[in-house]
Image 1 (cartoon, one colour):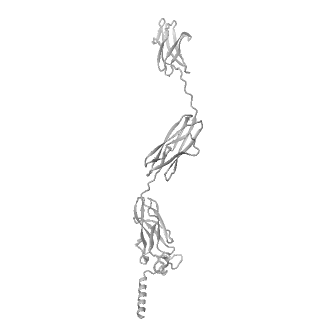
Image 2 (spheres, rainbow, N blue to C red):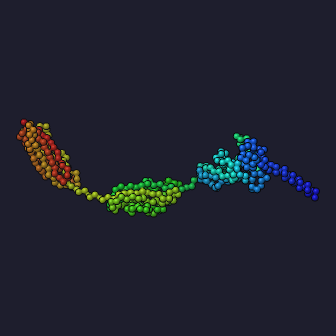
Length: 400
């Protein structure tokens, strides 16, 4: 019996010796912390903020853990890391470091475990090692089971218990993206009974195939608008598909609406192509009329003066630029103005001339012999079916 008692005593002493570095008492606060944290709200000893040691075994594992909320992330997506390592509430600070060791997030002072901290994932795909940390004093470093104690050179007797957490950033997900060029088709005025056509390009500016399942009129859009193709189609990344819109007005009203283009674009399931137009009654076809113009008019001889006893001959060149040929009446009149300003008609002649469509005809009038001095004003007039007045003038001076 004595031997057994001695054995139990030895085991008890050994256990005490082994456990002294793992025990945690509120009095440790008085010894190690109160000098700098005298303003702690309790004003007395506290276990808050200390790493959980062997004495307090009701809190579960004393290991520090850091766990990401997802197995992988998209570039720039929010990463949330949950840090756990004790059961005491208050006066706890969790910190998150990125792959370069730079602090990227921290919890507010006074947080309680578990602590979740968030930061954006790197923008480049790859596997990164971040670290979750619990900030505390150096006396905690040897009193619990942790992985990596790093001293804070800017705050004596303090540092971080750090544990690695893996952050995997996957490449961007390939997705289609629809774009319409243009996004609206104004048809303007279109004659009733006719059809106007315009096109728009359905573009894929994304990185995966764009599957268009339908191109259909929006509710309330007139059936005077139709679209093709009517079946589904696929547009490769960077490609485009032409959609044709026809407008065939049946009356003189203004029509407007849109076409819904449904696709697998996750951001825009239905794109809208706006359309508008107005019907109009067609104008009657133009009536072809005979239109003969004066190309040239002169009186020969064309010298400056004409003496009495000489002769003058009116001549003209007629042009028909239209599509209808025919005969026209051409008249030339001459009026003499003497030195006193008196005007006297001295010449008149009329001819009928036939001019074919697109052709030219020449006409020569009877010769005239002046008998009195003065200035003669010659006027030629062509009478055709065109409402304009085709005239030209020339002058001749008669000297004594």
